Length: 404
Image 1 (cartoon, rainbow, N blue to C red):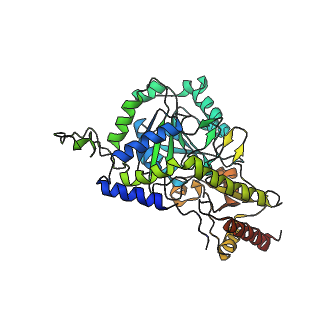
Image 2: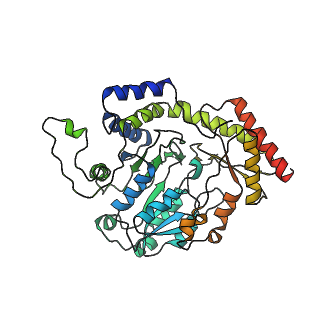
């Protein structure tokens, strides 16, 4: 069976993790701090903090900005559950907006959804393909939207508009108009989960790019504190002679990254541009060449005009099929020893969100995209022969189900 997205585990990874174990530092320590520095250099953001997940990063940013009950946060209906869940954790209302043809959120839908209660606009770079950042930032920074904004605290008063928080979990290494994602809007969250392009097993980071009026060094220190129980010193800081005493300055959380995770990340980051991205791009181009001439295939965008994907997902859509037919195609692909997936079930389809009153009928484009979508395997060690097996399996399964 061809798997969907196994991590790349080779001798370099094993050696670096072994060295981390031998060093005695297995929680947050020197490797985590170095990983943060290297990410910052790679992306060009103002400050980066590493955590145990992108989800944790998104929630910490919302809480730093003071999002609470009575507030609204705009979220794409077409995303993974973490994007919506973190808003609910803060007690705020999720305001879903529909997708457009490239899977990503529709900027006009964002504008139409903004009210005086809107505190944050969350976007999602689905599959690693960048959203329309200029359009979204233009909306957030417009005089019309600023006039609507009602700040509740110092941070909101300082920014004086909705915060733009990008869920860029899929998009590490993607580019928009020549700029690295992570250096574009107020904050970007990246995932280093096991299935991501760059994996630390579990992990993620937040890259900050707020206006220069914000003290990014102070913000970084705050994020380190709030991600470790509100504790003013981590284990590394307490190793200094006589430096055992610390304070708890707020009721924080426990979501710091470990040096074992950072060890994986440092190896992967070093070879990301030279090996990982080119390899994933080659696989996507092979898929595109195989499917673009098929009348039933709607191929995803991954390198168009001023947008360059991170090549995380190849999100193929089958034209003219219903959800049940798509599901049957998926089953037949699995029967041919090829693993595929679906990204994602829009959140209004889930019981937890239905109970809150959301209905998928309000987001027709998101549902249409989802109902016809099949994600194909992409990972570093996927051979050309295996790629051909994937292509053959998909084509055969489509023919069997819809007769084309």
